[in-house]
Structures are given as C-alpha cells and as structure tokens.
Image (tube, rainbow, N blue to C red; front, side):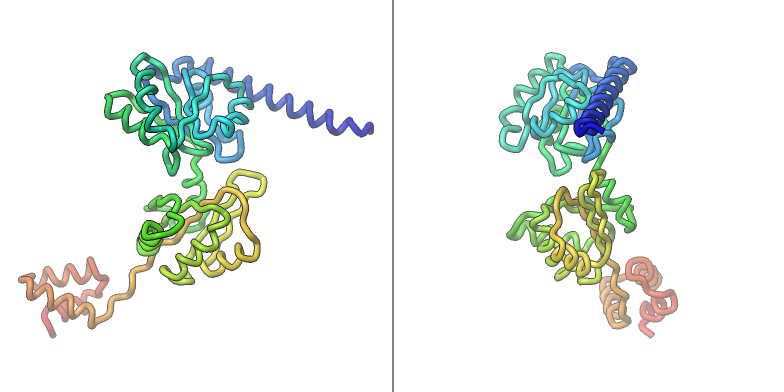
Length: 309
C-alpha cells in the first residue's frame, strides 16, 4: 500500500461524514421549516462532547435563527461547521452580557429569532445567557427551550447513586465563605448533589467534602463524558480523591455526591423532643405522630415518651 493511501482513506471518510452531517441539517430544516419562532429566544442544547448528540430540532433552529449567541464563537465553530450552519454568531459571555442584552431585545422586538448555545450542553446551567432570558421574559417575549444533551443529567444517571431528587450546585467558589457554604450545603442535603469542578481543583474539593461529609460518603466523578476518554470513577470520597491524587485528572468534570443519611435518633434525644413538645402544649397523640414521622421513632417508643412513661 502506498504510504499516502491510509491518509487518503481517512480524508475520504471525513469528507463523507461531513457531507452526511450537512445533509442531515438540510433535511432537519426542510422537515421543520418553522422551527425557529420569530421574536423568540431559543435556548438550544448542544453536544457535551460527541458531535452526534444533537437533535434534529436543534439543527433546524440553528439553521433558521437570525443570530446564534455563543459563549465562545471559536468553541462553537467546529459544531456549526460540521453541520454546515452559516448563521451569524455573536459572542455572549459574562463580560458583555449586560451591555449586549438591550441590543438583542431590539432584534427580538423586530422579529428576529435568537438562539443561545453554550460551549457544551444545555445553556444557563453555570453558563451565560441568564440575563437575556430574564430580560426577554420580563419584556413579554417568548423563551423556547430546545432540549438535548446535559452533562448534569448524563453524570447523574450514570453515577450509580439515587438520582431523584437531586440538587445542582454547579462550580464551588475557589475560596472563601462562598465555597465553605456551598460545600457545607452539599454535605448536608439528604439527596444527590451535582457539582462541577476544574481538573486542578478536583482533589482539593473532594478532600474538603470528605472533611465535612465524612470520608465514607459515596461519590461518582464523571470525566470527559461522551468523548473518547470518558471515565466514571465511583467510590468513597477518600478513595476517589486518592485515585485522582495519583492519576491527575484532565478534561471536563462533573461529579455527583450521595445524599446525607439521617442519623439514628437516640432515646435521650427523642425524650428531650417530647418534653419540649409537651411544654409547648402538644397533645400526646400529636407528639406520637411527630416522633414517628419527623424523627423516625418506633410506635412503641413514641407512645411511651409521649406519655412520659
């Protein structure tokens, strides 16, 4: 085989994949010629890694919109080029969003369909765009979600932990009271908590959580989701922190912390609760119900403590 033959075959495959992707976007726009609504903001979910993870409706909206607001236009270019989307782009990020919103509202009122995309996944979850959506909503303009890929949900459903209910806290602050408050909240919530973190701060954050929530609390770290080097590392906070201390992580990271387990009530604690309720005028039957429903006491113990026997 000629040395260049392999490269040519790869180039041919790449060109074929690009042509097929453009044809798919063409077809999507033809199937839904009114996918983009004039005068509306479209919050469009895009792939979190694998470029195939985009919906036909999203392709049609991005083709038909008057402008695509991107967190980073350079980051958006590979996706738009892959599907032959030539819609004008506009950089909308935390540094210019406040000043850009009035101009975008003017375009919306003039009938332009505006799309918002983030660097990856569903916009507004730890991404810019919230000011525009709030302003459009307050102005009586339509805001239309175009659902799709979400790193939050992908990590959650693959975590192996109870997925419902859950709370998303996003990126913890790097330092200070804001960080302490976020980690303390994550540690005490009784259900799964989803957080984002950068590779160079992951180990510190896992160690900090272990100090608050306990080293044995379960966690699942999802790295490079949908990409070639996708990894989901599950274990205790201590185990996973030790692993990434030895093998420094790279890429995009989402992690899921298991919920806190309620401490077993002690009889002395329940007796004190019952006494306090009696002082407040609660009837014995109400005390029994509260001790059982709110504090996990058995029926016999709740009855005995409610009657102070």
